[in-house]
Structure formats: structure tokens, C-alpha cells
Amino acid sequence: MANPRGTTVINGTFHSPKTQHSKWQSTDGVKNGIPKEAQQNRKPRFSDKPIFESYPEPPLYVLVLTYMGYGIGTLFGYLRDFMRSWGIEKCNAAVEREEQKDFVPLYQDFENFYKRNLYMRIRDSWNQTVCSVPGPHIDIMEKVSDDYNWTFRHTGKVIKDVINMGSYNYLGLAVKYDESMKTVKDTLEKYGVGVASTRHEMGTLDKHKELEELMAKFLNVEAVMTFGMGFATNAMNIPILVGKGCLILSDELNHTSIILGARLSGATIRPFKHNNVQSLEKLLRESIINGQPRTGRAWKKILILVEGIYSMEGSIVNLPQIVALKKKYKAYLYIDEAHSIGATGPNGQGVRDFFGLAPEDVDVYMGTFTKSFAASGGYIAGKKELVDYVRVHSHSATYATSMSPVIAEQIIRSLKIIMGEDEKHGGLQRIQQLTRNIKYFRQRLIEMGFIIYGNDHSPIIPVLLYMPAKVSAFGRHLLKKKIGVVVVGFPATALAEGRARFCLSSAHTREMLDKVLEVVDKLGDLLNVKYFPYKKSGHPALYNEKSFDKEASFDEMSIEPEA
Image (cartoon, rainbow, N blue to C red; front, top):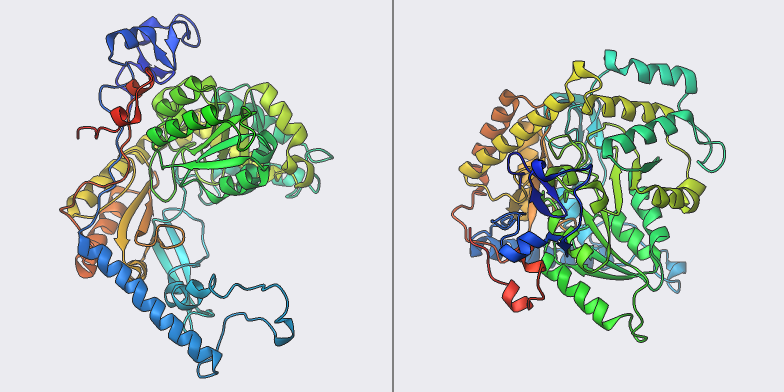
């Protein structure tokens, strides 16, 4: 949902710039994140139309055939396991030695069943070896298997000029060396590649300080701390923010790094339905009323964990509504902007910028530099007190090697381009071009009859294929046509929701997109994956903010929004 022209969103509601008399809109007269005037008029300024992302469903026969396909594959898998156990068929999977039969099993047989008998059949659709810069075109090393996908070998042939629809190069900053990279080259000559120490010892360089100050300016927050690995930024820092006696409310589709960090924290974890504020509010109410299990004591802290853009669904978090909830129930909000920072919002500042919220509406900002910034690493941002606490207690700062100065300079280069300080390379133009590419590509796919998920402003566009055989066939056929795309199946998605995931970039030209769309159109007819017309999904509906300014029952809030 974009902002209406001439307005910004503060505390989850729209405000006219004419009413703003200070840097941030005053919160006087605001209850539960909603202005008093809006409550009295019963029409919140946030929006008259609820935020709603459709999740279309295919015809019933598609789901039936999908489950039948998995069922038949499972039956043949058990048959092949029986043949392997009797030596009729060679077993290429890892097995326990006979002398270890009394040990705790290292390889759980059932857990590896899917990998042995289903994944191996279509394994060639993944793990491609790229031998070029991940720009709009890439070169891929051809591979073949002589043992039914258990192992691969390269033929020595390179597939040239494959249109890259799978990389997270949203702003097209992952390119070969050009004049804008001179500072990166100079940094390499001055500092070398590695730091060989942690941030707590000898690993804090002036480049790290420069990057953190620039990132804080970009995000409009008080302070930032950077880390050398994006995954570890979540996994190693969430445990220092919450612990035993705390409650984590986590979106059910959060990234594995968030899930791992939550589990390591020792806090109680309760998932809520994806992007569903009704489910979140129900958990908040119940948790506050009931308190901790057995003792009934109040929770020390309640932390809501969400992502800016969900990488498998292409959906954008309903941030204004969640901000209103976290204020109403006095919870904390942690947002992972790995895919949204740089690519979302009029200034590329992520979903907060997209919705026009104030920086202080989110307690903890997390993001990575691996997508829009064409680098690696991550950051934690927010108030100075928070970041100072993270500097002292973070496991990454204590035990992990610092970010390479070359990587830090690459991020600084990308930031300056996005912020407009390097006008020659058009940061704002890249963001606008990405938005145009997203809208064009999504609209064309819908017109062709494909079922797609996600938000109209998300650079990730999932195309639903459902059946595992069609998932692999889709990826193989596109690669033959020199189009590289990521196909995804179980367990990364629900069992019956296999899909292809297109990642758009500002570097894609209209000619490239038209070529991809032409091939995908023909392939959709060949594989019969155009499932329109469709019925509305049974996924939980999403609600606007007017339901949060009163103590309404959940039955009253469960009315389906009008299309």
C-alpha cells in the first residue's frame, strides 16, 4: 500500500505535512497509535481501505494431483529403501556402520527419507555454479550427473548470457569494476582483505565507524552496529535482547535465522499467523491476561518478530497495524529488513519509509547488506542505548571476526549511491526503475493467468506451480532457454505450494523482461500451470487499524474485507 500523495504516516495513521510543527509528529491525543480525532470520527486517517494481499487458490484437482504425486513418490521411495536394505539396489546415502548400531543415531532414517527418494530426483534444479558477476546476465557452468543426481560433474562448457532472475541484486549494484569502485580498490590496497580480530579486540577499524555513522544517517536513527554475517546478526543478537521469563511472538513464516535466534534465547515462543494482526492481537491479549505458564507472573518483556519482506511469499509486513498493536499492548518490535532495505520505499529506507512511519515506531531495526548493497554482513540499528548494549553483549562482537574493510567500503559506496551523494550513478532512479519493473512484470504474469503471491511493491514475485514434477520441469526448461530462476519446494514451502521465485532488479531492461515473459507464457501453456480463474483464498484476512481503537471482540473483527 502506497502513501496518498502529500501525506505521511505517523504512528500508523496518515497526516498532512501542513499539520507537522516539529521533526516528529507529536503523540499528544493519540491512543493506541491512533489520533483522538480519528477515534471520534470513527474514520482512521490510516486508510479507508484495509490492507489485503490475496493468496489465490488453484482448482481442487491441482491440489489432489499434487498430493497424489507426493503419495506415489513416497510409495516408490519405501520400495527403493526395501531394495537397498536387501542389496538389490546400491545405496548412495550415508548410513551408520554396523559397530555403531547401539549408538544414538546420527542419521535419522525417516528425516532423510524425503531427501533420498524425492529431492534427489529433482536435485539438478538447484546448486548451479555461476562463474560471472551476478548482474542482469550471468554465466553458468554446465553440469551433468552419472548416478541419478547423487553427484555431479562439470562438462567444461559454460552457458553464456543467462538472464538472471534469481539473484537479490535489486538495485543493480553488483557489477563488474567501474570508476565508482575506485574507493573499494583503494581500501583493498590500504587495509588488505581481512581484519583477523573481533570488534572487542583489534578488529574495529575507522571504516567500520564511517559505515555505521553513514548507515545511521540513512536510516534516520541514533546509532548502528554492523556485523560480518547477516544470518548471525539475527541468530546471535536476538538471544541478548530476550531470555527466560520473556515472550517472543513470531510470524509463522519468519526466516530460519530469526527462528534460531529465538530458540537460543530461552524465551517462550508463540507463532502467529502470517501477517495477520488479528492472530497477533489475540496472542498479545491472552499472554498479558494469563502471564507466564505455571506461575502466572507478568512477562518481563514481550518482543514481536517480523520481516519487512518475506522472501518466499513476496508479502510486505503490515507495519502500521503492528506498530499500533505494539503501542497498545506495550510490547517491543523487532523487524528484519533483509529484503526490504534499499529496495522498498520512495527513498529505499525499507518498509518504514514505504509506510511513512517515524523511526521511533520500531524498537529494533535489523537488516543485511547482501541484497540491495551487493555486499555481505548485517546491522542492528535503533536508539543509542540499545546499540551500546549490543556492542557490549553481542556474541558476534565478542567471538566473530570483524567485517572486511573492503566489504565495508563497498557498502559505503552503495549507500552513497542510494542516498544521492553519488549523483552519477542515480540511486533514486534505480529505486524508481525497480518499482516500474515490479509492477510491469507482476501485471503481465497475472494477465497470462498465473497464480502469484505477494505485494505489488515487492521485488520478489512467487509463481505457484504446486506439483513437484512441474517445479523441476519449470526450472530445467527455463535454463535451456537461458533464463535462470530459483524454484522452491518442500520443506522451504508448504508441501502443496511449490513455486518459482522471480527476483526483479533495476538492471533488468524492458527487453529482458519481455523475453522472459514470452518464454514463461509458452512454458505455462506447456506445463498447464495457468490456473485462472481462481477462487479467493482461505488465508486469514488482514485488517485495518480501526479495529484497534476499541476493545472489540474477535468475532466482530473477523469480517472479510471488501475487495
